[in-house]
Image (cartoon, rainbow, N blue to C red; front, side, top):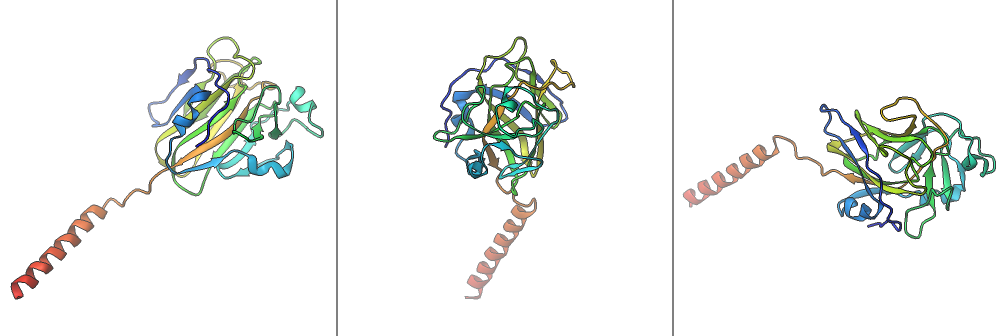
Length: 245
Protein backbone atom coordinates (compact mmCIF):
# COMPACT_ATOMS: atom_id res chain seq x y z
CA UNK A 1 0.00 0.00 0.00
CA UNK A 2 1.35 3.39 -0.95
CA UNK A 3 1.13 6.63 0.99
CA UNK A 4 1.43 10.26 -0.01
CA UNK A 5 4.21 12.15 1.73
CA UNK A 6 2.64 15.57 1.29
CA UNK A 7 -0.70 16.36 2.92
CA UNK A 8 -2.07 19.43 1.19
CA UNK A 9 -5.81 20.02 1.26
CA UNK A 10 -7.52 20.56 -2.08
CA UNK A 11 -10.03 23.32 -2.74
CA UNK A 12 -13.71 22.71 -3.27
CA UNK A 13 -14.69 21.39 -6.65
CA UNK A 14 -17.62 21.65 -9.02
CA UNK A 15 -19.26 18.43 -10.25
CA UNK A 16 -21.29 18.44 -13.46
CA UNK A 17 -22.92 15.01 -13.67
CA UNK A 18 -25.10 13.02 -16.01
CA UNK A 19 -27.83 10.77 -14.65
CA UNK A 20 -27.22 8.34 -17.53
CA UNK A 21 -23.87 7.22 -16.13
CA UNK A 22 -23.08 5.27 -12.98
CA UNK A 23 -19.63 6.86 -12.92
CA UNK A 24 -18.58 9.26 -10.16
CA UNK A 25 -15.45 11.39 -9.91
CA UNK A 26 -14.31 12.87 -6.62
CA UNK A 27 -11.34 14.82 -5.29
CA UNK A 28 -9.84 14.26 -1.84
CA UNK A 29 -6.89 15.43 0.23
CA UNK A 30 -3.47 13.97 -0.51
CA UNK A 31 -3.33 12.27 2.87
CA UNK A 32 -6.39 10.14 2.10
CA UNK A 33 -4.68 8.24 -0.71
CA UNK A 34 -3.83 5.08 1.25
CA UNK A 35 -7.33 4.66 2.66
CA UNK A 36 -8.96 5.27 -0.72
CA UNK A 37 -6.77 2.75 -2.53
CA UNK A 38 -7.76 -0.02 -0.13
CA UNK A 39 -6.31 -3.52 -0.06
CA UNK A 40 -8.03 -5.37 -2.91
CA UNK A 41 -6.31 -6.60 -6.10
CA UNK A 42 -4.81 -3.71 -8.04
CA UNK A 43 -2.66 -2.83 -11.01
CA UNK A 44 -0.34 0.03 -10.09
CA UNK A 45 1.60 2.46 -12.28
CA UNK A 46 4.01 4.81 -10.50
CA UNK A 47 6.27 5.46 -13.53
CA UNK A 48 9.35 4.27 -11.65
CA UNK A 49 9.86 1.56 -14.25
CA UNK A 50 10.43 4.18 -16.94
CA UNK A 51 13.46 5.76 -15.31
CA UNK A 52 15.78 4.12 -17.85
CA UNK A 53 14.20 6.27 -20.57
CA UNK A 54 15.50 9.39 -18.87
CA UNK A 55 13.73 12.68 -18.44
CA UNK A 56 12.00 14.00 -21.54
CA UNK A 57 9.00 13.81 -23.85
CA UNK A 58 7.34 10.41 -24.23
CA UNK A 59 5.76 10.81 -27.68
CA UNK A 60 2.35 9.65 -28.84
CA UNK A 61 0.53 6.64 -27.38
CA UNK A 62 2.73 6.36 -24.31
CA UNK A 63 2.02 2.80 -23.20
CA UNK A 64 1.93 1.86 -19.50
CA UNK A 65 0.54 -0.93 -17.32
CA UNK A 66 -2.69 1.07 -16.93
CA UNK A 67 -3.22 2.08 -20.56
CA UNK A 68 -1.96 4.72 -22.98
CA UNK A 69 -1.50 8.46 -22.56
CA UNK A 70 -1.54 11.25 -25.13
CA UNK A 71 -1.44 15.02 -24.98
CA UNK A 72 -4.69 16.87 -25.70
CA UNK A 73 -2.69 19.21 -27.91
CA UNK A 74 -1.36 22.74 -27.65
CA UNK A 75 2.33 23.59 -27.52
CA UNK A 76 3.69 24.40 -24.10
CA UNK A 77 6.04 27.35 -23.94
CA UNK A 78 6.56 27.94 -20.21
CA UNK A 79 9.58 27.36 -18.03
CA UNK A 80 8.67 23.66 -17.79
CA UNK A 81 9.37 23.30 -21.50
CA UNK A 82 12.37 25.57 -21.84
CA UNK A 83 14.01 24.06 -18.78
CA UNK A 84 14.37 20.61 -20.38
CA UNK A 85 16.90 20.22 -23.18
CA UNK A 86 15.37 19.19 -26.50
CA UNK A 87 11.80 19.66 -25.26
CA UNK A 88 9.41 20.69 -28.06
CA UNK A 89 6.44 21.29 -25.74
CA UNK A 90 4.19 19.18 -27.97
CA UNK A 91 4.05 15.93 -25.95
CA UNK A 92 3.69 14.73 -22.38
CA UNK A 93 6.95 14.26 -20.48
CA UNK A 94 8.49 11.97 -17.90
CA UNK A 95 9.93 14.02 -15.06
CA UNK A 96 12.44 13.38 -12.32
CA UNK A 97 12.26 15.56 -9.21
CA UNK A 98 10.58 18.90 -8.59
CA UNK A 99 9.44 20.75 -11.72
CA UNK A 100 7.73 24.00 -10.76
CA UNK A 101 6.16 22.14 -7.81
CA UNK A 102 5.03 19.13 -9.83
CA UNK A 103 6.48 16.27 -7.84
CA UNK A 104 6.74 12.52 -7.49
CA UNK A 105 4.34 11.22 -4.83
CA UNK A 106 5.70 7.67 -4.50
CA UNK A 107 7.61 7.24 -1.23
CA UNK A 108 11.24 6.69 -2.20
CA UNK A 109 10.42 7.24 -5.88
CA UNK A 110 11.46 9.84 -8.43
CA UNK A 111 9.39 9.70 -11.60
CA UNK A 112 5.96 10.99 -12.67
CA UNK A 113 4.06 11.96 -15.83
CA UNK A 114 3.86 15.68 -16.56
CA UNK A 115 1.44 17.56 -18.84
CA UNK A 116 4.46 19.55 -20.06
CA UNK A 117 2.46 22.78 -20.25
CA UNK A 118 0.23 21.39 -23.02
CA UNK A 119 -3.57 21.54 -22.76
CA UNK A 120 -3.61 18.31 -20.76
CA UNK A 121 -3.75 14.58 -21.27
CA UNK A 122 -6.06 11.91 -22.65
CA UNK A 123 -5.80 8.54 -20.91
CA UNK A 124 -7.20 5.37 -22.48
CA UNK A 125 -7.44 3.03 -19.50
CA UNK A 126 -6.82 -0.61 -20.30
CA UNK A 127 -5.22 -3.27 -18.10
CA UNK A 128 -6.17 -6.59 -19.70
CA UNK A 129 -8.57 -7.16 -16.79
CA UNK A 130 -11.98 -5.86 -15.84
CA UNK A 131 -11.80 -2.97 -13.38
CA UNK A 132 -14.22 -0.82 -11.44
CA UNK A 133 -12.30 2.01 -9.79
CA UNK A 134 -9.19 4.15 -10.27
CA UNK A 135 -7.26 6.19 -7.72
CA UNK A 136 -4.36 8.51 -8.59
CA UNK A 137 -2.56 11.63 -7.41
CA UNK A 138 -2.75 14.97 -9.19
CA UNK A 139 -0.13 17.61 -8.40
CA UNK A 140 0.07 21.37 -8.97
CA UNK A 141 -3.18 21.76 -10.89
CA UNK A 142 -5.08 25.02 -11.38
CA UNK A 143 -2.41 27.28 -9.90
CA UNK A 144 -1.75 29.44 -12.97
CA UNK A 145 -5.24 30.39 -14.15
CA UNK A 146 -6.57 27.27 -15.83
CA UNK A 147 -9.72 25.45 -14.71
CA UNK A 148 -8.55 21.86 -14.51
CA UNK A 149 -11.32 19.33 -15.21
CA UNK A 150 -11.38 15.54 -15.01
CA UNK A 151 -13.87 14.02 -17.44
CA UNK A 152 -15.03 10.44 -18.02
CA UNK A 153 -18.27 8.94 -19.37
CA UNK A 154 -20.08 12.28 -19.43
CA UNK A 155 -19.04 13.20 -15.88
CA UNK A 156 -17.00 16.38 -15.44
CA UNK A 157 -15.47 17.48 -12.16
CA UNK A 158 -13.50 20.71 -11.90
CA UNK A 159 -10.70 21.11 -9.41
CA UNK A 160 -11.41 24.74 -8.61
CA UNK A 161 -14.51 26.89 -8.11
CA UNK A 162 -13.11 30.41 -7.85
CA UNK A 163 -9.59 31.71 -7.51
CA UNK A 164 -6.44 29.79 -8.25
CA UNK A 165 -5.26 26.93 -6.09
CA UNK A 166 -2.01 27.12 -4.18
CA UNK A 167 1.28 26.39 -5.88
CA UNK A 168 2.22 22.74 -5.44
CA UNK A 169 -1.20 21.52 -4.28
CA UNK A 170 -1.71 17.75 -4.32
CA UNK A 171 -5.05 15.93 -4.58
CA UNK A 172 -6.17 12.32 -4.62
CA UNK A 173 -8.60 11.64 -7.46
CA UNK A 174 -11.08 8.75 -7.42
CA UNK A 175 -12.91 7.65 -10.58
CA UNK A 176 -15.52 5.03 -9.66
CA UNK A 177 -17.41 3.45 -12.54
CA UNK A 178 -19.95 1.74 -10.30
CA UNK A 179 -19.58 -1.47 -12.29
CA UNK A 180 -16.92 -3.62 -13.94
CA UNK A 181 -15.59 -2.20 -17.21
CA UNK A 182 -12.90 -3.39 -19.62
CA UNK A 183 -11.78 0.07 -20.80
CA UNK A 184 -12.41 3.75 -20.18
CA UNK A 185 -11.35 7.17 -21.42
CA UNK A 186 -10.30 9.80 -18.89
CA UNK A 187 -9.49 13.37 -19.91
CA UNK A 188 -7.55 15.67 -17.61
CA UNK A 189 -7.39 19.12 -19.15
CA UNK A 190 -6.97 22.82 -18.47
CA UNK A 191 -9.94 24.92 -19.60
CA UNK A 192 -10.47 28.66 -19.80
CA UNK A 193 -13.34 28.70 -17.31
CA UNK A 194 -15.96 26.69 -15.47
CA UNK A 195 -17.82 24.46 -17.91
CA UNK A 196 -15.79 25.84 -20.80
CA UNK A 197 -14.72 23.73 -23.76
CA UNK A 198 -11.81 26.06 -24.62
CA UNK A 199 -8.40 24.77 -23.61
CA UNK A 200 -5.54 26.81 -22.15
CA UNK A 201 -1.86 25.89 -21.87
CA UNK A 202 1.04 26.67 -19.55
CA UNK A 203 -0.82 25.63 -16.39
CA UNK A 204 1.00 22.34 -15.97
CA UNK A 205 0.11 19.44 -13.68
CA UNK A 206 1.33 15.91 -13.09
CA UNK A 207 -0.13 12.49 -12.32
CA UNK A 208 1.43 9.68 -10.31
CA UNK A 209 0.65 6.60 -8.20
CA UNK A 210 -2.16 5.28 -10.36
CA UNK A 211 -4.00 2.33 -8.81
CA UNK A 212 -6.63 0.47 -10.84
CA UNK A 213 -8.87 -1.75 -8.72
CA UNK A 214 -9.45 -5.06 -10.47
CA UNK A 215 -13.10 -6.15 -10.41
CA UNK A 216 -13.95 -9.71 -9.29
CA UNK A 217 -14.95 -11.96 -12.17
CA UNK A 218 -18.77 -12.25 -12.05
CA UNK A 219 -20.35 -15.70 -12.00
CA UNK A 220 -22.43 -16.58 -15.09
CA UNK A 221 -26.08 -15.80 -14.48
CA UNK A 222 -27.16 -19.43 -14.81
CA UNK A 223 -24.41 -20.92 -12.64
CA UNK A 224 -26.37 -20.93 -9.33
CA UNK A 225 -29.22 -22.83 -11.02
CA UNK A 226 -26.76 -25.27 -12.57
CA UNK A 227 -25.08 -25.91 -9.23
CA UNK A 228 -28.45 -26.37 -7.53
CA UNK A 229 -29.45 -28.87 -10.22
CA UNK A 230 -26.22 -30.83 -9.85
CA UNK A 231 -26.70 -30.88 -6.07
CA UNK A 232 -30.18 -32.26 -6.55
CA UNK A 233 -28.92 -35.03 -8.85
CA UNK A 234 -26.25 -36.01 -6.35
CA UNK A 235 -28.83 -36.17 -3.54
CA UNK A 236 -31.18 -38.23 -5.72
CA UNK A 237 -28.37 -40.65 -6.57
CA UNK A 238 -27.57 -41.14 -2.91
CA UNK A 239 -31.22 -41.84 -2.05
CA UNK A 240 -31.51 -44.42 -4.81
CA UNK A 241 -28.31 -46.09 -3.66
CA UNK A 242 -29.60 -46.18 -0.08
CA UNK A 243 -32.94 -47.67 -1.21
CA UNK A 244 -31.18 -50.30 -3.29
CA UNK A 245 -29.14 -51.32 -0.28
